[in-house]
Length: 113
Length: 116
Image 1 (cartoon, rainbow over the protein chains, first blue to last red):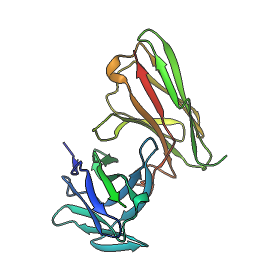
Image 2 (image 1 turned 60 degrees about the vertical axis):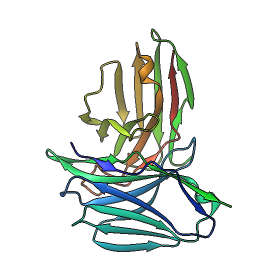
Image 3 (image 1 turned 90 degrees about the vertical axis):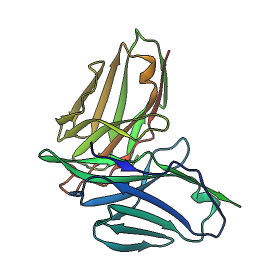
Image 4 (image 1 turned 30 degrees about the vertical axis):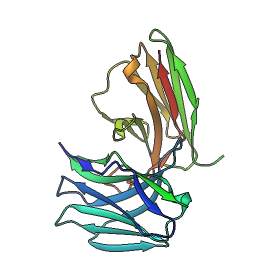
């Protein structure tokens, strides 16, 4: 069974610190990787996508991908209380003749003022 | 209106009721999805439609019945649900299907369903 694993948290960091969120996946055939942010009571919102090994930066967010280790992470620099949310890792895994977007359970991030 | 719109936002129903969830996307996307989100569990893909044609049914019980009359509208018809079906039901759309450049999902606000 194809899986995406995340620590449920909560991950608590002080304001201004770097928050590091991690995700592992089981299917080596996965090609696309995504981070969604979900505020309490709201729907998920795509914040980062990454397709090749290495780092991808967008503002305060950096996604890191290591396909050999089947590991993807999200770094949030200068964390703000408004970053407090659940972060969902999603992986596009091949399945039969198509693909499926498989989500992890999410990591809850709490940024303390 | 822009984005993906879902109604109702909240729904309470008895096990013998019949109700429908509605989703409308204003993004010109070709693929639409129903997901179920239960507490502490990953998002579960229920149904996938591409250009109004169902392309996937993820072993969902028959008490859930989807309908896609056109590429902008998606319904989820509910009947004789069980209490364990209580969850947040999310509609999403993408430009194209997964694996065809359509992995970026845009979600609606969801319907919080409670089955008594």
